[in-house]
Structure formats: structure tokens, C-alpha cells
Length: 219
Image (cartoon, rainbow, N blue to C red; front, side, top):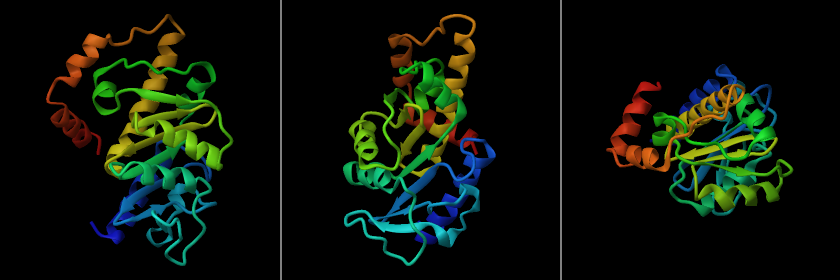
């Protein structure tokens, strides 16, 4: 995939985040890795306003902006540190989904409750509130990013990662749906999570094929 194609794909998923109300205004930021560079949303833009040529190219090793574009998102360090720490991460989606934020105001551990959540996301970790845009938040995220593809940020939002943008983005949708289901169920009684055995049973399936089927459905 070329850098041009990466930029166009970033626009596609950036617009999905806005259409599906996972961010409002100029909130959130997304990025993708390509040939030693990361392409990150520019500062001060609503994600659905970013044009292909406006994604900011940053050299992952040096941290230098390698084009003459706009300023990168203020969360540039969170993305940069994560790519440096984990070569398996190909894309990062940071959003402010309302149910996820509501969940972090009252809970910390999001249980695994249904098969799609188990197969596509697995466990979701939690990081207590840290001042946004700082190296402290970047460090806190990177500390747990290798343990889970989805991380809830207390009083802030959600960060998901994946091998590519599609995987990272749809994890965002599934975690937001999971938080919504949990909060609705919790209003009635304590939600019933999948047991460890039920989760492991899903994991023992042809899990890669299962994930591929899910992603194909979620276009």
C-alpha cells in the first residue's frame, strides 16, 4: 500500500468516527504506520474535515515531521511512543465515545459479555485519568498497550490499536457497544459476563477466521 492509499484510508475511517458519533468537534486523533513513518491527524481539525494531503507525516524513529504540512495532533507522543514500543501496531484510533467515557466515570473493568467482543477485542484495560497531550499520558498508554488492543482512559476516552486501520477502528465500535450494553444492563441488575471457560471456548475456535468474518461484515 502506498502513502497515498494510506492517506485516503485515514480519511475514510476519520469520517466514520464522526458519522458514528465517536468524536465531536475537533476531538480525537487517528494514525497509521507506513514504511517507518506515521501519518497522523493534524491539530485543530475535526476528523471529517481532514483531506488526504493534510495528514501529517512523522518519522517514527526520530520524531521529526518529514513533510511541510500542518502541526500534528497534540497527542502525537501517545501515537509515536506506541509505534516505537510495538512493531505489531499498524494503526491507532483515539476517540471520545460517550458510553466509554460514561463507563470510566463509574467503573474500571469492562467485562467480556458477548462473542464478537471476545473475538475481536478480548480484554479491555483501564488507565486512570492523566492530563491529555502530555508525555505522562503517552507513557501510561504505552505501558499497557502491549497487553491489550483496547484501552479506556479514565474521564477521557478510548484508544484502540490494530494491525491496520480497519481492525483498530472496528475495535473502537465494539468497545463502545460493549460499554453501552454494560451500562444498560447494569441499570437493571448486575450484568452476566462470559465465564473464563466460555471466553476460552471462543478463543479456541478458528479465531483468525472468525475475526476475518466479523471484519467482512463490518464494512
